[in-house]
Amino acid sequence: MSDKPTRKALIADADSAIYTTMGMTYMDFPPVSDLNASDAEVIVSGVPFDLATSGRSGARFGPQGVRQASNQLIWEGARWPWPFALDDHLSVADSGNLFFKHGEPQTLVENLEAHISNILEAGKSALTFGGDHFITLPVLRAYAKKHGPVAVIHFDAHTDTYSGGTKYDHGTLFHHAVTEGLIDTERSLQIGIRTTYDYDNHPFEVLDAAWVNKYGPEAVLEKIHSRVGDHKAYVSFDIDGLDPAFAPGTGTPVAAGISIDCALKVIRGMQGLNLVGMDVVEVAPAYDHAEITALAGATLALEYLYVLAANKGAE
Image (cartoon, rainbow, N blue to C red; front, side, top):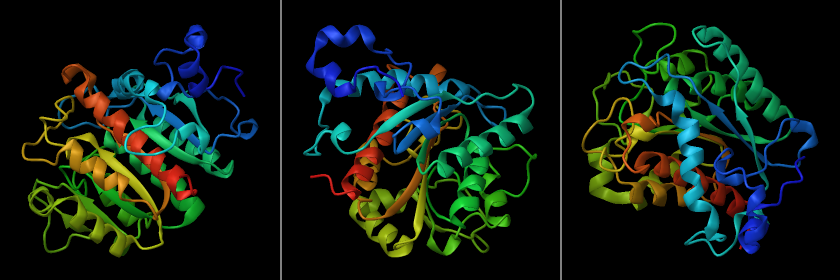
């Protein structure tokens, strides 16, 4: 455990700011190296990997960008519209970035699955920042080993269920996850889709972007709660699920997506679901402007953490 002051203490005492890690950890949460010695309930991890991209590279800098942008969220204390401070109800720590050998994707696969398994075996849940969307596959392998097939609530412009492509491809991860039995597709949804897929043989329920933009977050949440029920649910948020107006800094932007307001309302409305983990992927800061995309990713993750706190009974 680190003896660094809590975020709440830093907010209360500006003189303590000398101890802040200044964006080196997400939300300035304490760093952690020994999972078993930490009382954190959620472990943040960065995965700076983008060797599976089909469009623009650069998502390897996503964890750094999201952590840096989270500096803009630290000083609120209790975040609107929540009536409580997160630190009073949920303990979070940041384990830094995953180590793997760049240029050898298999080391990423093995190390990431082992890392997430260690988090889960320590009785904690994972919040993971990519990196491209391929990283979700080894994460889901670890979750399925612990919990069995999980429900997946997937935000994206693309279904990522394509059967072609190479072994390491951010467009095939959900094809492999379904084939490997990692996902309960009858409990899962894909939200914000606006690219083509196999409509006749698709394993997921799809709420495409046009439908979401027409009917709004309340209708989306009704579908989510009805389909997921009390099953263990994992949230995977590809930042290109947002319209490029709200997330220009990504590798494969697609016009006519959902707004950040809609996405936050949907995340916020997931209270009551049995949420076991989340990732935010495909933030590519090199194509960003004024940290718009990185800030969106940092905010979505923070909203998810508030939902976890609310699910514990925070008021």
